[in-house]
Each structure stands twice: as C-alpha cells, then as structure tokens.
Amino acid sequence: EETSAPAEPAPVISVACVGDSNTEGYGATGYPSFLAERLGDGYIVDNYGVSGTTAMASGIDPYSETAAYEASLADQPDIVVLMFGTNDTNRSSWRGRDAFADEYADLVHTYQTLNSSPTVLLCTPPAPHLEEIAGMVSFGVQPAAYAAVNDSIHALAEEEGLTVVDIYSLTLDHPEWFLDDGIHLANEGAQVVADAIAEAVEK
Image (cartoon, rainbow, N blue to C red; front, side, top):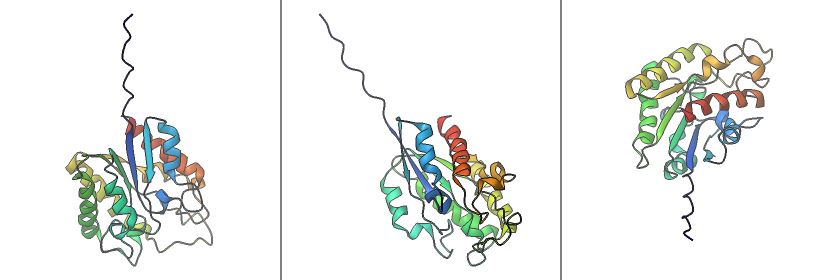
C-alpha cells in the first residue's frame, strides 16, 4: 500500500510587539499576552515593550537605545506592531510635530528594512484620561500634543502604505479601560487593544 507523506506543518508567524509601558504592561498585563491568546498556535508573539521609552531618538528615554530594541531587530519578525507616542508627549521629551514625525519615521524604517521584510502595523497611543481621574499621576504627558502624534502616524502610514490600528479613537470614550492614573491600560483595556490588533494581523 502506498502511504502519503505527512503534511508539512504550517509555518509559525512571529509577531514582535514594540512600544512603551502599554506594550510591556504596567500595573496590569500587557496587551501582547492577550494578543498571543487571541491569535493562537500559528503565531509566536514576543513582547519587546520598555516602560518610559519614546519613539523619538531625542526623547528622554529613546527606545532605540534599549536592549529590547536590539532584540526585536535580531528576531527578524514576520510582523511588527509599534505603539508609541505617550511618552513622546512628555513635556521633557516633546520637540514638536516635525521632530516627532521625522524621528518616528526613522524608527519605523529600521523595521521596514529588516531582511525578514516584515508587515509593519502602526498603532496610535491609547487616549489619556487625566480629566476624569482626580489625583492622577500624569507622568508629564501633554494631552494637547496627542493630535500631532496621531496625525504624524496616520500621515506616515498613508505615505508608506501601512496599516494603522487607531487605538486612540478606540479608547477615547472608555476611561474604565485604564488604571487609576488614566494613562496605563487595565486588563480590560489591554484585551480590547489586543483584539483590535489581532483583527489587523489576521487580515
């Protein structure tokens, strides 16, 4: 009797989640854990988030100077999910719209040019909810700067033909998805963010 060769296993898709504390997880589970659950066995999701970091190289704590950044590049992922902007609006880091747009684009391009030619997904940052929460710790963020951040991300995506997952709009009317500081996602918010990113990944 002829026996058929066993089917080749489907390739596993690697996803690198790159960002600040809302990626790494701060006082709650980072969204990459929920993303891994949602995507299932066909994916490996790695969390390369680093709390406090900025997309801007001129910021107070640039992501590009971290070990996680180097590890995310070395991973040669199939998909990269970037979510920055919160710390870039910090009054100690913010250099204005043009500086953010240029330096954010530089960071994105380092992933676009990897040998693995990954699909790059851009996420706007979660909306701040400082006004709803008395006694909050603002971490120096400036809500007025978010419009410039979001516009820059959308403009780069249009220019480069990239997908934007608009986390800012998704979370704008949901302060209940955040911890008491109004900046960091609680587990419920991280789950919602993961679901939105998963929809983009699976398209």
